[in-house]
Amino acid sequence: MMRRSILRHSLAAAAVLAAAMLPMRAYAVGPEPKPLDQPVELTVGYQKVGHLAPITLISDELDKLGVKLKTVEFARYADARTALLSGSLDMATVGPADLAIALSQGATNVVGIMGVGSSKKYVIGRKGVKLDSWDDLKGKTVAIAPGSAVWFQFAATLIEAGVPYDSFKAVNIQGGGANFDQALKKGEVDAIVTWEPFESVPVIEGYGFFAKNLEYSQSKAVGAELGMLVATKDAVENKRDAVERFVWAYLDAQEKLAKDPEAFAAAYAKLTGLAPDVAKEAAKPITLGSVVTPEQIENQAKAFADLGVIQKDVSGDIAEHWDASLVDEAEGK
Image (cartoon, rainbow, N blue to C red; front, side, top):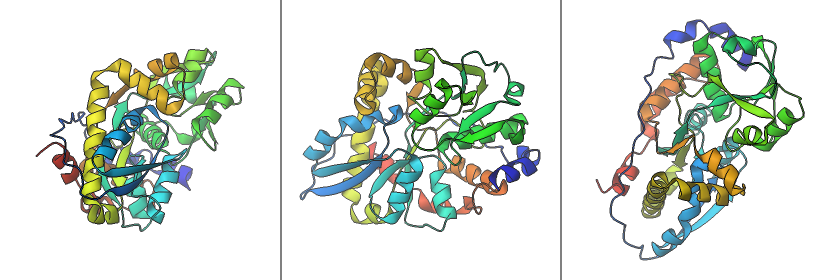
């Protein structure tokens, strides 16, 4: 269904995918908030990916502010979204499309707070495979994760570039990003569409390369945002003081890492378990800080509903499920 919808609408979609790319928002963190009178526990889902490196720095800071941080690791954004919607998490890091996906599935207990980072995204080719243009995808075998954040970016770019989705063989890879790298290394696929650090690993180890002419983070519908911080409405309403302090601590750590590439690489290595030299290379393409806005998510929701990728158009519901005041408060506004 997903593939047929994309093919059927690929030419008509150009008019839909008309949202302008948005500049990165640089947060200026306000004064440190006062500690809570009574400790509050927050359960937060996350993934071991570089653009979430600030999460490694905030536990002790939150402890001083009266917030007991409990983190739960997930391999995929989709799994964190599912856990959040089930009520087992207060907050989670998810993909930029996950707010629209959740709303399209009838979930209402979710609130978007902010984006977390951006980077250029390249198809990763297997060494020896020719990928000089989008035309070179024809006949190739490409590993993808349908419904993932990077898949949304990739699919939107194909539509805008006029590349038929059935011009190559899409292979669904289950599990984490390491499985993509293994498939590429074994020669099972010609290219992969994945996320860091699993993009840089094949390049560093010599069996893959960045296909620089197949860049897919600049689509008008999706853009370059790598992830998003969301919370349940229950947490925002009933644990708001704790959520405010989490946002403040996260932005404070993000600001520090954005100013210090060496510290960012070290935090990346700590979070992911990568060797320091690998983490340093994988960190280079990433810019910490939000590029997504409610308007961008509305455009994305509209585009992918028209394409049949998500169940219904929820673009009109995004504003009701976005709380910019948490970031404003963290900035001292």
